[in-house]
Length: 204
Image (tube, rainbow, N blue to C red; front, side, top):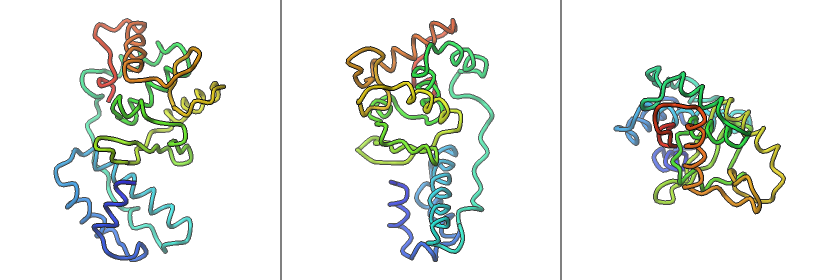
């Protein structure tokens, strides 16, 4: 949502008149020094938005369709290897732990952002979630289909009325706060028997 507001402020023309060159100019001028992965996130957001406009017959064609995403190096974040990630996945003891692990890895959200997310912020139709980040800025973050699968499995186990996306496993099923998230990820690392400390930021 933050990206779309910024787009509307930058490009002063009706959405039906926006073309791919406008979008390229917007990305180049508003995000000149950000990481390639961040630009890819912006492109993903633009493609989803303009595809929705097209589906609703608001625009005649999708100008974001031909935007090219940056090629990223095929490596995992920090010093986590593919083998170690798979060991962490196998070490998850329940649906919540697996959903939490996949969510952090897929979205790259900070622990404070994960803590504040509510179920109502989740859109499983387009694999997106509304995040309130630093400075109370709202943005839309996308996740992969694997994360969607485990979020759905986890939510099917929920019998409580807590609005939080991630909660404790015991009554009264409170929101899982920052320290609780760190403990859950750390315990997964211990069960995986990895020879390093595992913490949420390592997954981002």
